[in-house]
Image 1 (tube, rainbow, N blue to C red):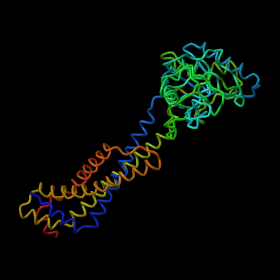
Image 2: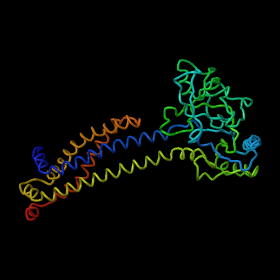
Image 3: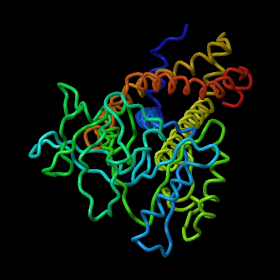
Image 4: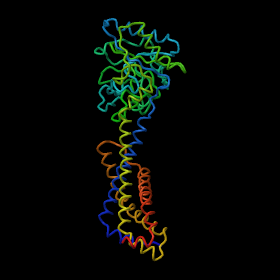
Length: 415
């Protein structure tokens, strides 16, 4: 049976190497645990539902070139009429703002005209009565806008609409003790109320960034269309028709009027023709890039730690060849030599993960206080501990197995 005391005595004789590899394991545990937990949080963030039937919705960013501003409403209306008649199109809408757009309007809203505790709204969508059917967004109370309630206005002349539709999350924040339906809300400090005529189940806002998580689904939808040269059309396709419409709709628009620009979507994330898979990818491109970087860092740290353990164990085996040979001559089996080095590494690892756990908790606390991140989950910490201990044993096995294969004659001769 191997004794712990002889192993501890041997480690005391190699304090520098023991401390260095212990610190490496501790730092790797602290950093990798937090990185993997952050990766998990980022992936949850990226996969949040948008409230849109993403498999059937297409966006087209259109910009009028050399068009008379007095004629923009008629041009937009003609486009919408054309799009709604296309084969395979279920419905079409025009909207300044839509889920995961990565830009647009946001503002504050309250349930009284002078409420100091205003709620910051994720987004305001300025649109028509077709947006909810296009997005396949479900009304859970009230009604949709009527066509006669939709106003066409220049951006610099817009005022809060008389009627609005809210998402359920915002409605509950404004009126936690009862239904918001039929109640007034005040947008952006306006003294004029907007009456809530409908409540939709769920929609994502214009801004998917983590800074806006608390208001991610707090949306105000207003029945007014912004009259401007750049506009965005949203189209819902019949099942199986999205690909055909992606090609056919821009071509039909250009045939109707060529005084327009429809980009290819390779520049500005809000430009061009994009299905909602592309919209989501553009919205979360930075997030996914961050996830990849954190994953690469975690892999590199684990590889460096494993290499350090292999190198240190190999060095110790080389230094102890004579001792190994003597033990083998005294009857120690290969299994006992192997167990000795594995136990030695395990003791170093246990001490290292203890301090690494404290360091991981400290890093997590710092991040949560200064960057409003979630606190590190105990599950990730325990998983990290198990991974580092297992990694240490696997990294030690190769050099330890080579030590166990040393014959007594070879070891004592080389010593």
